[in-house]
Length: 458
Ligand code: GDP
Ligand code: ZN
Image (cartoon, rainbow, N blue to C red):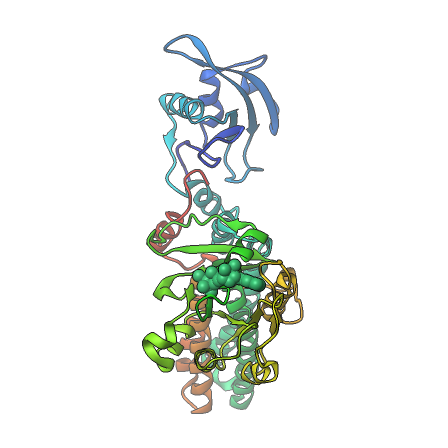
């Protein structure tokens, strides 16, 4: 495939110490050479080497920038094309000047995600790996980063490829039996189909089981802090935000009017959401009743129910417990620096099996225990993200669910003794759908749409 040479600023905009302008394509080295002045021409240097020099503006005939330039020739590069990276001072003015200079020499400004798209189109990575690059850019915690890294290394791809192979062999068997019906031991075909399909189904299901965790790692655990007025909800929120680094949220497509605060609690990204006003809710039950507030609370992945330990349990507290019954929650008995007046036995009863943690937020006590409880709840037994192939991308999840659907149809067809070539249609469809995960069978418009979500310069 023939491509032109593209360029973009590939470091985040802002006041970094250095910035990188990246070029990729057949003319990358030649274009950089037109403005570079150093001890050697870039055309003559070894691949994967870095060179100090100056950038000359040919129009002014004067040096405009001090730079370090990396030259990496195809195919051992991210895009599998010739890649040149110009490291320059990080200020907005200087990096833009370098970019303009490169554009004037005939490079084209890259579209968002175009570097990664080229890596995909040139066969360097498959689609799920390309999507992982995007996840990596947005990863909010180390664990989320690991999920993306695993995916980038192709864990999901190789799993999907193995399953597709099994389906393909199954289809081939069916073909043989259709073409040579005299060999057809019908019983055998049926049991072989059944076994293979059940195997594939089980594996897809086990990947899907990691989906909710994967999605949470990616998008954050939406968390609502509820409790009566003055029990310490704001204090809790502040404690969580201050103890943990708040995570910058700059996700394309999120609306600005939804206030979201991300905090990283021991690898679990909490998203303190304010949709439907459930970020910090005191009079929800009073306002809309137990049943309706239940509906609202169900939207949260985690509820932090705060009680003032210095007061007797009130009817309002009991109503909050009722609204949150059966949902994932942690009960927090706050103000333990003061006299305990709440009935702890009753609280334990109302809490069902949820953890009950005592805190004194003014004295900053109990916050560690609370964080540990959050992590335990999420990682049930402390499974490390690396141990599993998490699937977190909603496109992948939808495709895996469709795969199961078609496998079920095929299994049902076998059960109902449908003609085997009818069954084959569903198996083939499952094979195709799995192919969409790795990008074997996706349409061009989908590819364009996926890559356009990337940041510029990636
Ligand atoms: P909210 O209305 O539920 O958000 O409660 P706030 O976080 O605004 O706290 C209400 C009041 O309780 C404030 O004056 C806090 O300083 C105080 N407070 C919060 N946590 C504690 C605690 O652990 N002990 C004591 N003694 N006071 C607390
Ligand atoms: Zn408050």
